[in-house]
Length: 252
Image 1 (spheres, rainbow, N blue to C red):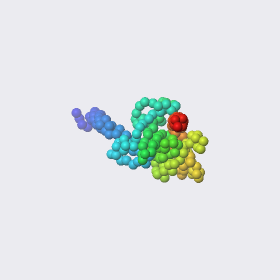
Image 2 (cartoon, helix red, strand yellow; image 1 turned 90 degrees about the vertical axis):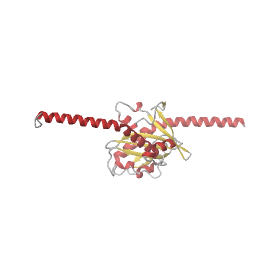
Image 3 (tube, helix red, strand yellow; image 1 turned 45 degrees about the vertical axis):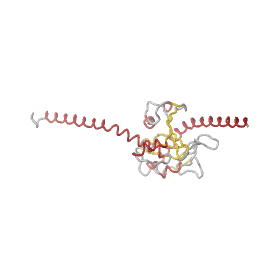
Image 4 (cartoon, rainbow, N blue to C red; image 1 turned 180 degrees about the horizontal axis):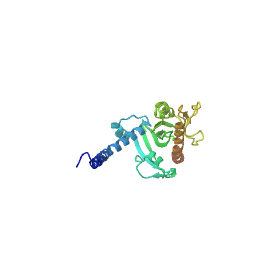
């Protein structure tokens, strides 16, 4: 074949495209298990970070097994669902336009650290330029925030991207998702700064109002579902405790 002909050039180009495509497809397939493991390790690290436990990728699995005692899935109505909580991708679920919030599955993770129990809630929402997500750890009262970590895909550096810094995350510690009447109010990322002494607000990000509002909406829409479930558990626990106390008194 004449190497200077158009036919030769076209044939050569087609062969190269096929060869390169095959190599790329093969490489992607070979690397797929590693990609999945890396994603799982990153998720474990983020979950542990919500309770203040640092871990590297090589430590993630071991520390996750050490601190996470159980995984649970609930429905939008607070009913327990069978399945693997860890395998639920709340961000993928949030962005799936074929699903409504009523169809979502809501996983959470029970952690034991220093003889204390915490409940770690994953969440996803919308920032200015793309999705935002995070994990919030609640104390055993189902009300007080023990820790929070957030991340984003494409928020503006120095502005909305500040949600994954200690300056933004640390003030969540000690905040309450219920008011003094026990009513759910969530936590607001307040533009202009949180009101002094307000247990339901943290400072918003200067120049990152839309991202701040997105985090506020994410917190409210997610935590209200879990609050319904946790409140029901509290009622059962309180009733059980009252029955035990009554029986103890009657036996005296």
